[in-house]
Length: 159
Image 1 (spheres, one colour):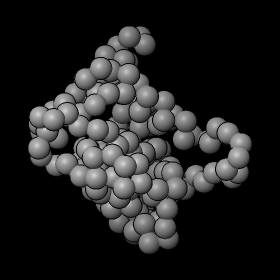
Image 2 (cartoon, rainbow, N blue to C red; image 1 turned 180 degrees about the vertical axis):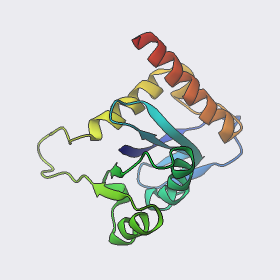
Image 3 (tube, rainbow, N blue to C red; image 1 turned 120 degrees about the vertical axis):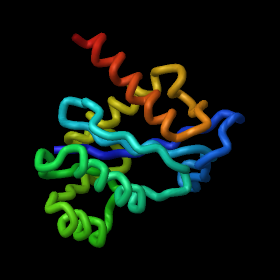
Image 4 (cartoon, rainbow, N blue to C red; image 1 turned 135 degrees about the vertical axis):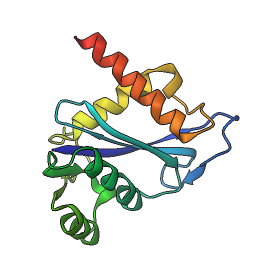
């Protein structure tokens, strides 16, 4: 089972490649799509311009996930940003995976959403690293590598 989420981050003035504007969060920068397992281990990270919506970003992330973890993923849990029947049907048709959209029930009260807190915790761990609090890298591949290194450091400290 995989849990997917995205995070928009601001960029440093040195970044010029793959920059976009996330109108929902009003951030000029990059968007990080991460997929974790149910323990919070990072399975996949993809960084691109922030102008890409979650519904379009999932079409770039899931083929990479299938390539890396052939046969071991059966279901994907996502938030409301990935909602829409065409996306659910596309995931079912292309990968034979169930895409479960976890929605909020009430806007006025805070409630922990099942399994969603795991990926949110992982995003917080990534942002806790100074170099990942903002995107300082010129290349998105380097940014992905820095996120992977931060997760390696976090999980070594957990042992």
